[in-house]
Image (cartoon, rainbow, N blue to C red):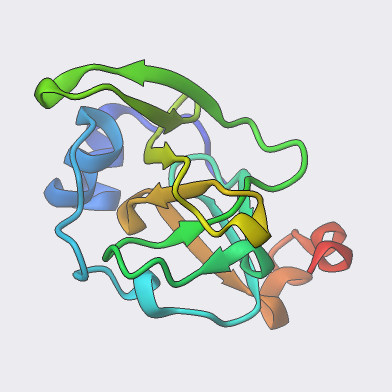
Length: 143
């Protein structure tokens, strides 16, 4: 996957709404992205770089309107930083290139207690049956 997009190329690839989420720290509307209700086997990758971020086995229905995960994939390049916007203190989840969403400590205790609340616009889903052909075969053992 091409990883060195110009901002203009990236905006064209993603569209204005997704670009706003990914690069300008926007938020998808709740319950609007199809990944919220997608529970097929596979992996979720950074929409900009294609780097693996989340595994389907760690996804759960939080009822919040955004795809939710109990943890990041092993060795995922996910960073957390304090976000004080909108009069509240939250923890932003991002990569070097992409705003993903936020992490909260209100996830199911049985899954570790975290809820990575992720914008569907910031990730791409790679179905299990396509992982090998798309260069993600080494991740099959993680599912």
